[in-house]
Image (tube, rainbow, N blue to C red; front, top):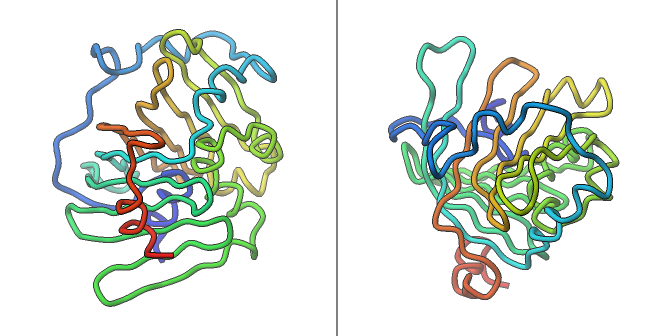
Length: 228
């Protein structure tokens, strides 16, 4: 599997390479984080709990549009699709453009299906890979303690308006995979994700049409993860 494919699912978490959609809204728009949000010192520890309280989800469904900026390419790679989260199952991402591809991430493995080919990668072989891969589903479960094993977590803004959670690796070995992850939101809603890889590549993922918990039906979960 290529590094770009691995990078997305490690958040969403960061980007499966693609091309062919309009660029996401830039910072400063009415529905995008203010450009100054990440300025100043971040809050830590219990100060981030009000944001995590919004993210203790059972289910989430949304659409995404994404740009991956690769150091060696002049133009970003772009993709669109859907993301489905279910607390006990994990997170599934279906890329619809430019190529159909499904990625399912559980607590133990990463499964990638494209066409007739399926590849499965266990996460138990690398503590760092597992920590990186599970940032987004762990965040959606609202589990700050689990994330703090591997990352320093900082909060800019507040849960009453725009906020940004920053995740900075604690170890050199994890920093060899990722430099930072930033999750942006407004009040109780997620808005976008930014992943900066150790390679210098960055991925911006914008989330839209978000539905939570009971608004995500069983049929959608079965389609994303497979019937029980």
